[in-house]
Image (cartoon, rainbow over all chains, first blue to last red):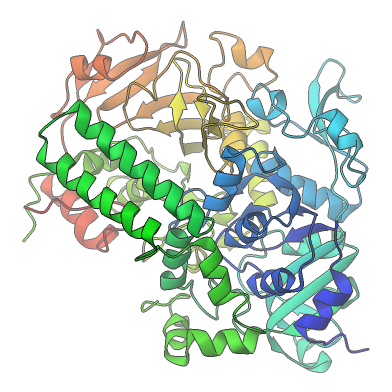
Length: 365
Length: 267
């Protein structure tokens, strides 16, 4: 049976409000951006999100207010944005419900989910803030049926009396979103390069949406079973979405889009125009304070002039810097589908991202 | 032409990292300075080392500087592409087998005298739920600090070297001797040193408190105390020599020619 469908239909059919979502990939590598963009366009919300090491894909969901709870271990477009900016701002403003685990524990939790384990004992996080501080209290967890009541619990190892270990819950994933290099209509997937946690979440999730660079026939994909990584029966939807991980990387196919990741880094500083005005005014006030502390300092005078101008220009509407909202209007809401997005990025730019086979990345990205 | 006899603080730090990697060690690196240091070790100072990254890429030898631990640049030039869980299992088994081959570099925003590191958030006027400054979160650091000996990379500033960190992301020696065991952590692993832009700190074998072991040609023990927010013993400090011009040439021309992580001075 063919599972091939459009991205629109896949998301409409398999992503519902309140789902536990898990995204594959690793910060800026093979992140399922095309599917996340389609979710943003369609409007589903209230997700509990597991991203493994997350990047822009989870930052966009957070900034658009679609996340009811984010289970974090690390969130950054590493090399471009040290800490994802909407993630950071929403936490600092007290607007995001979240939990912190170490990456080791979170990835083991996703693996435990793929193994169908009832809970997971680990010897990690002991003595640290990861055990001491809970982002989501036991009481709040009880009102969230898709989360376990406890973040973690120290227990005695029944096999080794006296040994303390840490029990953590096993996620119950509704929908896994992964992007792979090749898939066949029956759902079989080939992943080139590191699999990350993609296989784990594809097995663990009740529904898996696969976007792929290329669809190949069921016969072709079976030519070499050493290359296939996901059993087709774990997959509900197969969607052809070339450059579906853009602006992140896709091993053997393309590199990350330096320009887009830099654009997102800058734009995501500001939620929207009003936030940009407020932040630029705050920056001007800070520059004034710095100068007051060191009157006459030429560098500080210059910095203040610059900050004042930026704040005034933003307030009067003469020049408002690009914001997170603008970025999404341009690259997500402004494109009805992946084909329109590719046209907008442009052929020569996409060609520059193409990986050089002898290197495994692009030297012109 | 760049003057290889003059070097920056960061280049000194990268050299200090490379000097502290030993023969045949398996070195857990991230991106940034530790990667430059490990690349320098692999090429010049200690070629027998095996750099690995927490995404699960083993024995990496990138040609171009990767921007993240999951970068295709790491993936393309490594021995094995494991998923992260295999890396986690590997580091735990190294400890279970009593192997002493791993050393790891981790970074942080705050550190206390016992080497407990915070890379989660700074409470400021708020608390964990709504901190003044939020960072990425643990990443692989907590697991690494649980099972491996670590070398901690920090900027040496008074507000970063403090008596108590807001949040312990990566456990050091906890509250001193026996602290790790009491917390349920391997007692025979822990932070070995802190490499900063002013010097190299080590931990006293008896008290587990940080002391200054080495300062650099451009720093002094007094500068280290001034920039440390707690009392630090500088009586044992020795001068560490700066790098040879050839080392600086390697960093600038071969390891990081694009200046992704180390900027070359303009003059």
